[in-house]
Length: 228
Image (cartoon, rainbow, N blue to C red; front, side):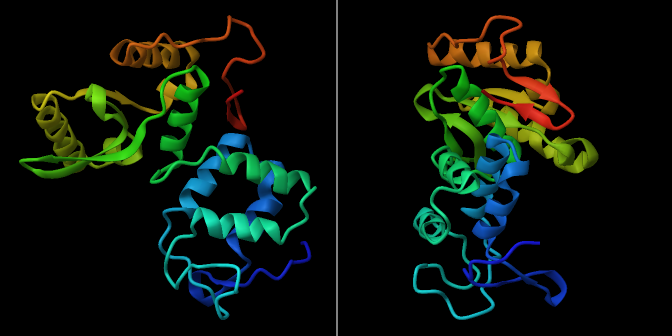
């Protein structure tokens, strides 16, 4: 339990009342890795079910049922102790956000490729096809190259899987070079080097990987993935 700084309450599930999401994130920050903080902030920037319980505070421009903007989040942080390590951690993570990022694994994938010097992608880039439009998770349109992360739904929903495979072939027919990755491609060091090396070849950039055994290397533990 902690004393609130009075940023305003939000409607939660089943009629519950929640503290402001930025204040909640600051409280949780000491228990979160940097990439997880960035993923949470990425989610706040796209989540469309944030509904204030009280009247909208003067410091925010948000309307009912709309995501927070970067200005909203920075304004909320201004009301919290500026020297707090948790507040500073959230400010640092906020610099790594990129709109629109639609899942934590998209955040993690982006941060892993940036960590080895690869160019920043366009997130959820729209491509019009004869099937309608597709959103590519991480794309480099000038190179017609994209990384697609396949999560649990792709393995549990066979209908979705079949549609996804057909969609990918349609995109390849349009000249797109796609690399489909799953969580093990992020977690396993050798596999993570493989897909990032492939991406580097498509973008004409040589990725920089720390030497084996280096403490700066991306590592995995029961607490999750650590990105230097």
